[in-house]
Amino acid sequence: MLELRFVRENLDLVRSKSLLRGVDPQLIDRFAETDRRRLATLAEVEGLKNQRNTVSKTIAGFKQSGRNDEAEPLIVEMRAVSDRIKELDVVLAGIEEELQDIVMSIPNLCDDSVPQGRDEQDNIEIKRWGEIPTFAFPPRPHWEIGEQLGILDFDTASRLAGARFSLLKGFGSRLSRALVNFFLDLHTQRHGYTEVLPPFMVNSKAMTGTGQLPKFKEDLFKLEGWDLWLIPTAEVPVTNIHAGETIDGAELPLKYTAYTPCFRSEAGSYGKDTRGLIRQHQFEKVELVKFTAPETSWEELESLLADAEAALQLLELPYRVITLCTGDLGFSAAKTYDIEVWLPGQNCYREISSCSNFLDFQARRAGIRYRAKGEKKSRLVHTLNGSGLAVGRTLLAILENYQQADGTVRLPSVLEPYFNTRF
Image (tube, rainbow, N blue to C red; front, side):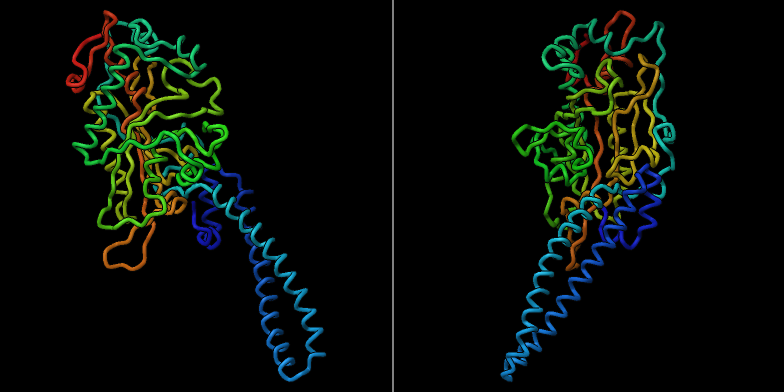
């Protein structure tokens, strides 16, 4: 979240940046009005406390000189003042809680380098890599390929759990496992990330720390009767590894990678991407998370993007990189690059990774700080994360890009040590 004082002192900037992101201006107006009420109430409380302190000295003087009759009416008056202070303290606590709720609902400020726009149509393509494959036959979408090969079973998954679930079988499940191992090996051995295996459920505090709560409550799955949520991404538990801690600055940047299943309700996406593996309630990702000093976080974002791109390059899957515009930017992000892989069976690019710099937005919510060598005062870290990569979407990209005329699918050569066969 943004610092309350920063919002108060930079209200016009916060308003203009928020409008670029499609935020209702009434939210910022509510902050200004609530903050005025807070300051007015606080001034009244402080004035009454000063009055009580001054009169209390007068009362003490009267008592010392034996003038109790003069002290008595002042004592009665100060009892009323004390009662009023108690009332105002309750009012002030409510206003401050309301103010905090408003601040928690204000998105991060987009970086000046983020292109202005309303939605995904205004995103800017900055790079393409790889050759778009050509086929001597009409390329098929992955759901047709997978069902014909007997490695994707949507009907059984639907009977087991309903819509937006899938069942991988045989070679399909082996390919998924091979991709997980390939991604983890790549990021730990070549890129220097530390592998972790976090819980797949977290509490509300952790969800709040990374920005999923309170804003995206409807997109999450909660365990009834427990303060536990199924994670929508490994970003949540991995970022919260250092919640409430002060990291030794000499250890930065800290880099973690984790494989987890992810769970999302896909609220508001009715009718979108109903075929195949694109938009599922349950899917798998290998996530990349960084904790950096503020001075290097933009450099680390470019490095994070390169790490995610490397996976696609080694798999020889064509892709493009786009910069999200202000209106398409995620709530917590200051800047985001999306990597979109080419899907010949659908004749389009689809997102396979999203790499973001959150600056100190998440760190402030989660209380993650660092102390540089020789400095007494600690500072908030900057956090970053990206997919390295989404497993299911990589699998479907392989099915579509490596499909053969005879109905088989050729494997990328880099996966042969993990899965050396045709299917």
